[in-house]
Image (tube, rainbow, N blue to C red; front, side):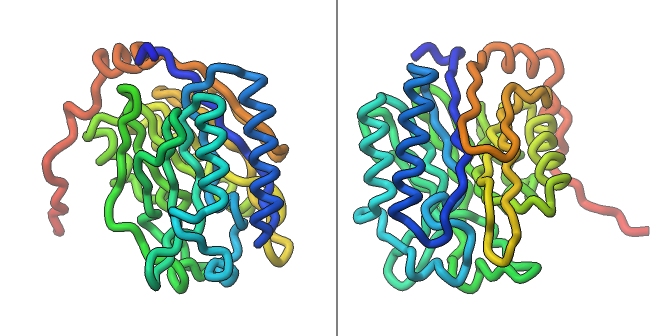
Length: 273
């Protein structure tokens, strides 16, 4: 693959709470339909917890080990069949007596190349993620075929430090895979655009759509955003795919003309008056 030309596909879907079998079938169908529609895709992205939906008390019953996960196995099969790299959203991963909100990264050969454990756990306004999930300890940037992707999940988007760390490490594409509520639409739209603009980096901002528990709703509005804040493709509340072909050389030229990292100070110690 020529590094500068990258074909990106992100899948927005509605997860049925706690119904792993149905969600696997839904995602398999969406992947097949969109991969056949666009053809020769390089990277596919899925939303957070597409496997079981956002319902914290159900996480222990839904947990799978990485080795035995039916969801991950399906993604490995799709990756190999279509020759595509997949950043697989996330699933509830069991490791010993701990649970993690984990993104598996799978290459074109259907092999797991790394995982990312969600670093920041959302536990406010009635949500209790930190009562069930153990936080990851580090950001993870994966390099596949010369493309460097910085991975994050949902609530991570509120912490600009993680994205600046990715940018300093050389990230070409920032990724946030979420299950984001409709009640905080302004936050989602603003933060996703800000992460792209402030880091001069492509951004995949991908979330679920559809109903949550107690009548709440996922937002939808997944976006592929360029390094200057332009939305290349977006989808509102429907299930489906968004697609963009990006040119990394354009981004490199943009940075060369106005590289804000040159002006970042080593320290921002506050002087109190």
